[in-house]
Amino acid sequence: MAKLEFAEAIRDTLVAEMRRDDRVVLLGHEVGSLGGVFRVTEGLIDEFGEQRVVDMPLDEGGVIGAAVGMALYGLKPVPEIQLADFAYPAFDQVISEMAKLRYRSGGQYPCPVVIRVPYGGGVGGGVYHSQSPEAHFAHTPGLVVAAP
Image 1 (tube, rainbow, N blue to C red):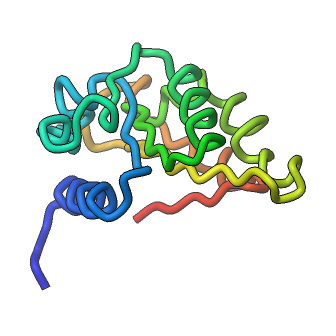
Image 2 (image 1 turned 180 degrees about the vertical axis):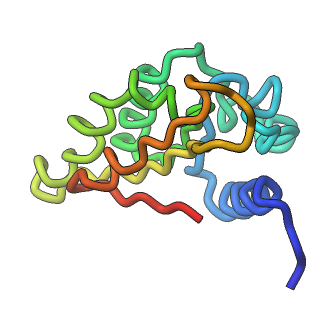
């Protein structure tokens, strides 16, 4: 088994899924132009184009809202929030819309969204770049939180 850095494993998985399924779309602040946080998506815009690697404004609520809309139209969006601390502005979209959509529609509208959010310490980012709010999401029906 090959040894990979965590960011490399994420990138390899994104590439594999995007090649396998053309409904997978990446979106977030600088995911195309600068390669996203820790450069995980660097170069993907060259392979998959601007329609599938979408740079968005620094507006977490807007990014997640757009992802929910994309999912309703049959896409499989993978939005990136640059650091977990910035998930709070998107909290309402995640908790009140994305998590409850399938239940509220009686299973008619699944919402296949995978949000990528780096979290925790280790980057020396201080109080606004080192929080770990995943427990807020883990206790929400309709969401699955996966973390190494």
